[in-house]
Structures are given as structure tokens and as C-alpha cells.
Image (tube, rainbow, N blue to C red; front, side, top):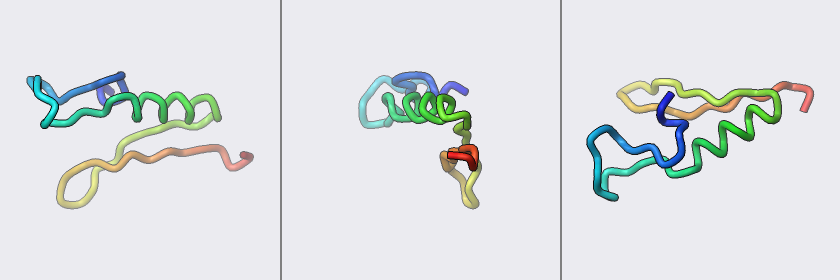
Length: 59
């Protein structure tokens, strides 16, 4: 998913006020994968998304 790419911005956005993800989602995904887990997005009631990290129980 594009949101996990470094410095992802909403399509068509060129100004800083519209927001973006910077490196946070990229670093989080990399950390989850190195620990044998994964990072994903889940829809929330009323719109929007929540980032969720799943890790193996053996940690």
C-alpha cells in the first residue's frame, strides 16, 4: 500500500498542510517485519483508518 512508502502524501497534494506520513509508517512496517510480524490498516467506524501491528506471541 502506498501509505507505507516514505514521505507518502495524499494524491494531488503539494502543500504541507494536507499531511502525509513521513517516515513513521515505513519505519513501523520495517520493525514489524524484522520481528516476524506485520503492519496493516483497518477501517474504523465513521471513516478513517487505524494502523495495527501484529507480532508473534513468542516475543
